[in-house]
Image (tube, rainbow, N blue to C red; front, side, top):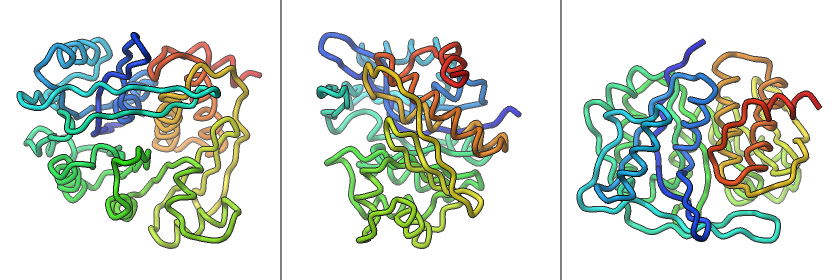
Length: 291
């Protein structure tokens, strides 16, 4: 079933030394949703500089450009420095402010939110008041399924903002480190932490990714787990975003959760095996699931 999914968030260049790759967590989710045939609209803002023009070309080439992409004449397009450790785990140096810190509440965006089946958002895009207010306005205007990708990037968040977004979300996705930070409990068991988070924020579905060890999901009053797929990691940039996109497609199409989780883990593993967040992966996913 074709879904109408609005993704609002950052679009940027990830710089790996001299190499630049289009990225941004929410853009990555939109990219992978589109690659899997979902009906997706992406909302963000880029500068009127050369980097912004290049990002517009990328979005056009991948069917993600529309009047929901705003152009900012004053703030620059975002270029992030990506640093990889020995395990190819990524950390990010993110400049501030940039164009997507100033996403405005425009009529086309409000109209899209009102008609959406689901709206996907993260925490990074909420670091500045203008974009944060725009997102909160949209969440107030829509009856769409609200999907929150926690995606913490220190120092670009406050606990108050995270709690506000979590309280509004129907679906929450985070990793183990984020769960440890957000769930204030002495209990070490991840299921107990998820139960505590659920009792506080009342999300319908809670997903915690565990890197190479797969993921665990609480959904429909039951826990589901998958151990993940073993791959040679090129970098982890975008792996969680591709996982989330695949998870959303399965969830909205009401597939069995075991199948949803297997496919999401497979896609996330495949993307981790490639450089950058937006590889083409159809054949690779089939190979992973067939093992």
